[in-house]
Length: 220
Image (cartoon, rainbow, N blue to C red):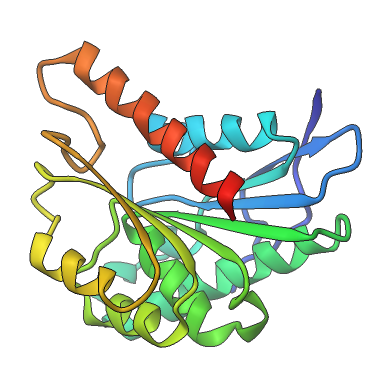
């Protein structure tokens, strides 16, 4: 069983960062941190079920909401500045989470916009280069993400849907050649990893995602 807490995390703006920390009552050697998409929170399936899987595996898990995306004028900022603000929110979250215990393994999850946050952490936080990265519907068309992964070559699992309008098969396959990465592409799945009009197929896809994730983590 786990306790459900909120950690004293502040965003780049100095305001409290909304978060939920699932802390194991027994010792935990793994920490999982989840970075959501824009409008896709950690309470939604693609992040909720991996959170539950990590807790079931005995990990502590932290989910956050960004302060940066609520700032007036955020969408008018250039990509570099938006990522700097999101990345600093993420950095602060990871730093506070790491004070909770002495973890042997850190697993970072990023969904969509959160995948760019993962890339920012790869570039700016060298102590996280040895973390495990799980990229959920990653924005592989963005050169910054591809270059960050190519340079750092972190232990990574990429999960995407081939019916996602933001999915780029060529960019993904090129990225796979850059390191010993793992990839799961769900046939017919959109940017929410749902198969429109087919709930049963969607649930099967979610189940496959969780099995693949569990196997990936066991091998790592």
